[in-house]
Amino acid sequence: KQIPLIPWTIVIYFGCYIFWIINYILIYRRSREYAYRFFVADFLSRIVCLVFFLCYPTTLVRPAVEGEGIFYDAIRFLYKIDAPTNLFPSIHCYVSWLSWRGVRKSEKIPKWYQYFSLIFAILIIISTQVLKQHYLVDAIAGVGLVELSWRFYSNGNHHDIFRKFFEKISGTLFSK
Picture 1: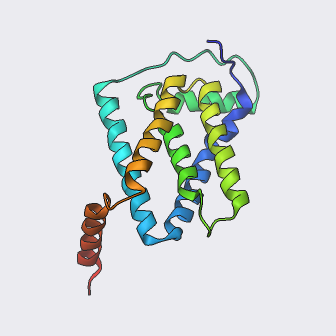
Picture 2 (picture 1 turned 45 degrees about the horizontal axis):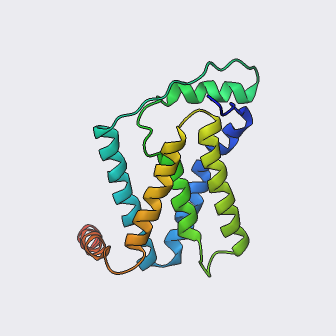
């Protein structure tokens, strides 16, 4: 209740989809090994989210949207298409933070874009708060989930079983 509704941040909130697509492509292009590590961390984090959504469902009471104009109309549209459920952890926050983590420290990706990704990920997290889409704990859990999965999959060979599985499937599906 203490956080104000800031309508113009809807641009950031919806802009996240373009941000995610671009970053996932950049991450894939870093190297095949890196892409496997990234996508396994992403996939298993989504499984964790699903478990929370099923076992610990959460909801949010949104405020009435009282203003006029394109930003207010966009917020009303968002509220209409996105039910205020399955909040913990926030997938918007998790995917945004993971998108930054994936491009961070890459020699193939310009430093200015790495900094932009960090700033944009933070802005997306803020937008989830000021658009009344998530509680603060949802955002913290989303970022925390990324940090845990990143530490686990960025080192070692924890991803090898998935890599071998996908290589076998792709070899079976696309062999001559």
